[in-house]
Length: 77
Image (cartoon, rainbow, N blue to C red; front, top):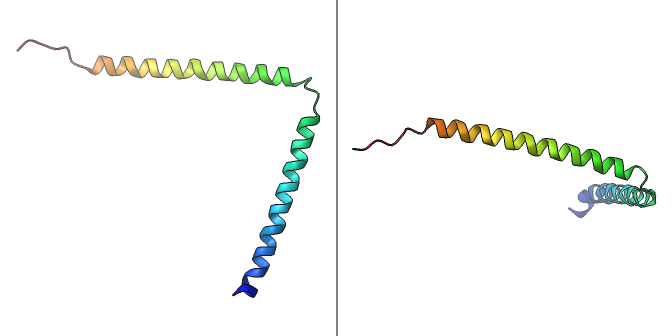
């Protein structure tokens, strides 16, 4: 059984090593950036977050008002 799984184990080990080395290279490249463009990127993500928050608030407010309109008025028995 071990001889049958050996090629698979080797392939998994090689793939893991490749992914690990690429991740280390990406991490190293990311740390070497001087941050010039980082402020612009943060401002864009901030703007996207604000737009999403406003859209979510409008959606939930509309759903709440729709649900509130569907509730019948209480009447005295």
